Length: 451
Image (cartoon, rainbow, N blue to C red):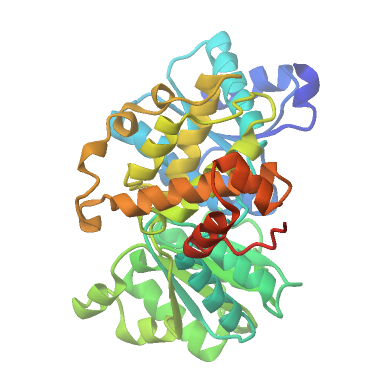
């Protein structure tokens, strides 16, 4: 497996010199290219100028948390794997790290074999994820078509856009689509989780700093606003920003200039800002936790991204997309009807992100066979499908929505199998051609099928 490690870069973060040197020595001896850092500032400084395949970090660091480093790093390098090492293995800390994308953890003390086993496991999982093209935007439902209509309209302007919606609905993907459609598409797209960066680091992350601005500022570094010059800066979790930073961000937007930390010289900026929030930012404005003037500056044009349970017509196309992306080394040619029904009746509190993870897990368990209900996590397999007539507010979808989604799925499948010839597809489905055409019209299947 050494050949697969050629050029594989690892950043190791730990404030214990012995642990740092041990991990670096073991991995280097196995062909990994390793850099190291002893605290958060050093780690973030290295991540700012270089990309890594794997981040290995202690949870407790002298100037912050390794979990914060994972949060920030995943925003800048979404395909980077992460792993935590800790002598204080709390369930809450490990769960938070996993929720942020860490693929494994290893408690101290650990042996060389334990370290290598954990790292090899992460590398294997990472190779699997590379087969997934989950960054592609799937637009099938009327709800998402409306969203993309708004994106197209605002893309030709330089207006500041606010994306609202639950976590996991794909706000960053919408922001990227907006950037690609805009006249700034030739410029950079820079993404930052403004709510996940420690307060003491956020100003430097956004506006940059000069050499000597604080302990550990060994060189002058540009911030996200300058990095996105001529392009788009996407700021997620804008509602979690502190009041002092809200003031500084407001000034930057009003004056169209920034001042790096430790400097007195202002720098003009030409960056389009797209922000996002999964919180009720209007309520935050009313209770005073978010500045009203900044809210109106950010919310020139708001686009709400509907939750996955509000657009069930997207569920099956998303599943098929994930299957196509991940299927390569695994097989898993189809889903049983029972499995499809369970996907359509589950409420998906984690939205598209949760759906992708569930499909990836199911493919691993199914191997080359069909994906069955038993391959889904218990909380999906045991979801109360008998209660499907409850209201949408309870987290369920109506029966007619489920039936329409299933019908749409099989009509599309028949059309694809028949090469788009509608008369042939109708025979495959046991329908008259006129009946098929009527159902296609009802379900909004408007592709240029023939025959």
